[in-house]
Length: 223
Image 1: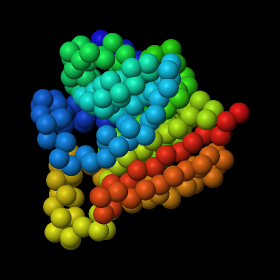
Image 2: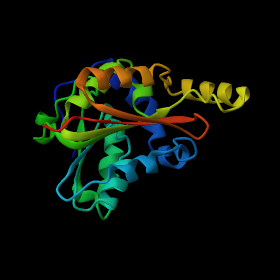
Image 3: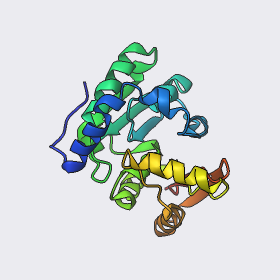
């Protein structure tokens, strides 16, 4: 069962309300528009005994796929929604690689992975369509980067501004995302660059599928 730290603030209640029913159809419906997630998982390139953390793990779909692709790694996932973690735990129990996955209830803007998992640094951290759902998203980005080991990598994929898409498509997508309290972060490229400069990190950034989504990797300098 998910480890539970101190109670979280109101955003947890909102996310539980949003996903208490959606969690049952989440993976079926999201595969059509959460593009690039599998690309991110392929880029993790985890080695034996590496530790991988997903922030905003939801139903566990991404983490279970990563654990199957990297059977010698240990995988950890946090989410602010207990409803989603209930589904993630159930999914892990049914998956061949599920024993590699450990889940905990946590706030991305105030992470305490030491209490949750006994781990305070990871070889890879990833956030898949997470920042667009976190009100203090820049703080969450900073928190994620702090958890990297020297030489570790933070992978981020999230909605872009769809500049290569027709206006009607952008309007329809925006209306749909609003239903789930999702707000694409136009300032994300600037925030990533600022974080990289501040931490003396390297950053790579790609716009995918006609700017439908953005994929970035920040690498912490080695010691």
